[in-house]
Length: 533
Image 1 (spheres, one colour):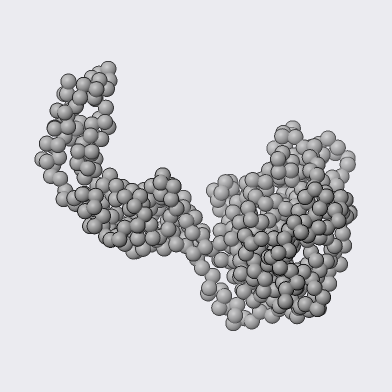
Image 2 (cartoon, rainbow, N blue to C red):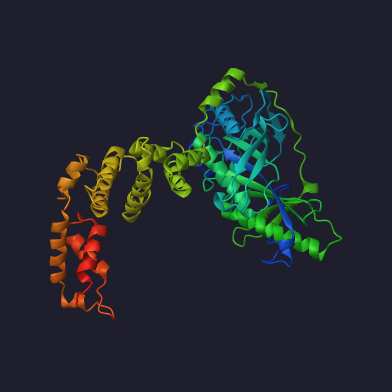
């Protein structure tokens, strides 16, 4: 029997409001005194480290069978354990451990063969048990790294970001203040998290954002998380300090609960300027180490609490959970399950098909989890390097361009890869013009579903022939179009009496229903119009 049911809605749970709760801010936002610019701010170095909380993509919570579905009503997914009912015991979700290990391997971490769980004690509304199960002392993985390349998402240098540790822990519930009430939604409470703690290796807001974007791509490709910051499935705490080059690092301050890359970059910029302003205006007064929030309207940071006021979490081993021992044979099996990572895919495809990095990244972006965009491309080219560039143009620019224009989304079924391959090959073999090929793509997308998805059937429906026009036939069509130019067309001549050749080419292409070779048409028309008066 469940103690909590979907009928126990968020609006029915009422808690006594606490306006000045120890260790937690009220909902008021206190803007910092930092300004948009600080004298000599370019003479300072910024040191940035991140703590990232990524929800593990499992259908059930970390220690209970409650669903992790995002869109369900408040308090619909709550087991007795999630509500901290006495007598309930945690049962570890093995799939969450598997996904955390795959992520650790992808991040080149040292796997801890024997890790343990601890209780982190604090008293607040969003944690009914008054403690969170985490891995403070003995995490599942340590000492990893993620390489950022020059040009990755705006980064202006190549560098490694060290991963201090990756640990598994419970997520907290959602807490919301409405009027004088504090409302609690336990749906998220108890969901599995990976806390990923980095070394302070980043030196700018752009580098911090580049790291988060690359980490998101890893989580999605591994399948361990969707990295969706809008849903709260990935949240960031940023540690920031400044110093003059060559001097010791300054006092760091932590900025909590950043839920978008834009807020991450704004918060780091604001905090950097605030700290520089302090050191330059009050050089003899140490900067107070504190925890800060960010005003999402102004982008400025504000004080939450000083580190001196931070609570003692009284970490202790969780007596209900034994040590977690990872078998070497199981770990070896997982290492073989790690898929090709996004940057490895980019390197391979750029080398194999001589295509641009940004085009490969576009394919990856079509489906970062299952790689359907890449599979579609490889189905079109079928290991033929000569088809690489044409296929990339037709998929990324023609197909995706038409889908965007018509307000539709991509899937491998929109145009089967076999049909796309036949279409591209027909264009390469001069059996179809580019314009005719684009008509085919537009027709298929516009129709939505066609019973016979063969190229011949679609061409027949569009009355497009694959017979190549002879140069003599094409010349006769061009002559006929020039003779039929109207006074309105002739009025478009420039001061030297030249007609806009693009306009005439368009008329020829319309006459041939796009079956003429545009380059050949231009060559013929340039000859015909050279002495045209």
